[in-house]
Length: 211
Image (cartoon, rainbow, N blue to C red; front, side, top):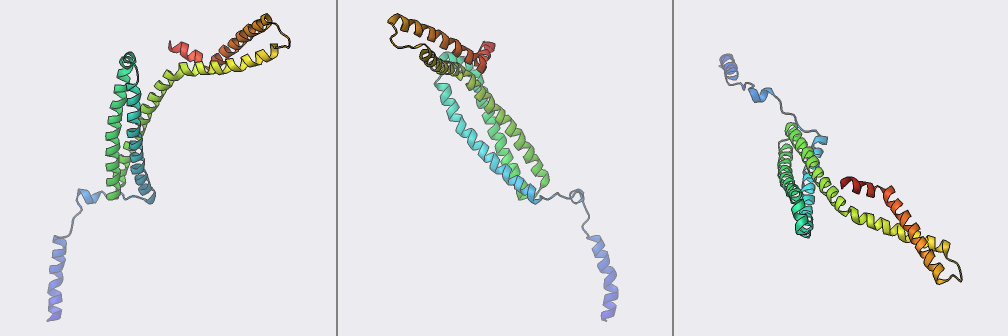
């Protein structure tokens, strides 16, 4: 009886196995690429880097806005569009960073190298846009500080050279007229050297080219 059951059941089991066997569909035909250990570390780094970059941007915002409010009304009018664009890029970068964090988290959760590629591309793009926005604003601020830098360099050089010139000209038992003449000559010499120092630093030429 047992032998008869085995003989009859084998074709039936073979038919059932063939009938209900899982056939590869479009999803199974393309095998998902899993993350390697280095890719997993990259995903974690993208999440941490995005959060850090977002924190820096949020911290930067109030400083830039306070700097804008401290400007005079004519200066606000002249530079208003630049600050409006700057804050607009902050909004865009914040949204892109949020999307990047979500994408990288999904890549780690589903162990998908394909999703990680999208997160990596988004992070690099956001980093480029955000860095350009910050560098552009810093360059603009540096340009505003330039006249003060010129004056500071001029004054430092003038004071140093005036002292040297006076030490070179000062003699014992000089009359008031001689001291006055020595001071005038020292001032002229110090001013000439101070102007030369500013010109050689490149600050003066840059200012003239901007004007």
